Length: 87
Image 1 (cartoon, rainbow, N blue to C red):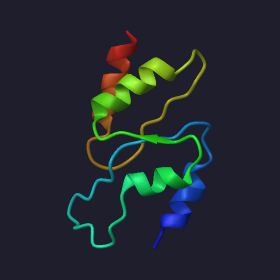
Image 2 (image 1 turned 180 degrees about the vertical axis):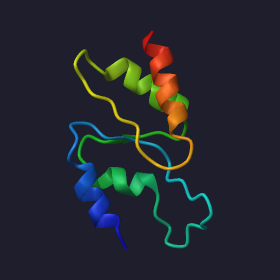
Image 3 (image 1 turned 45 degrees about the horizontal axis):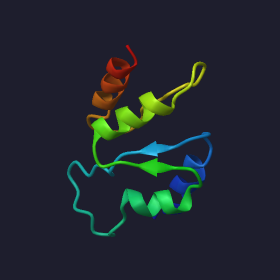
Image 4 (image 1 turned 135 degrees about the horizontal axis):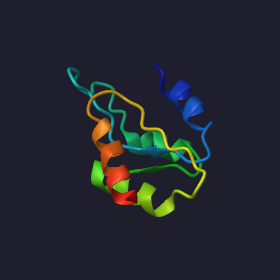
């Protein structure tokens, strides 16, 4: 139901790096996947693992960039991996 709203909001940042959608207690009854969002958001990328996300951000973030990890579940693990890769 909120697919178009997610697309609109995720177009706001200069770059949008996404992980797989986490359905902690839900079954994906609507068949919506991160790849579907990425197709609608110019310049976005998505990865299956937090390690891939951390590698991408570490390789592409420039001095002065703001990197925000946002979501439910254990996305904080990606943030820690990014910091480790930038040391």
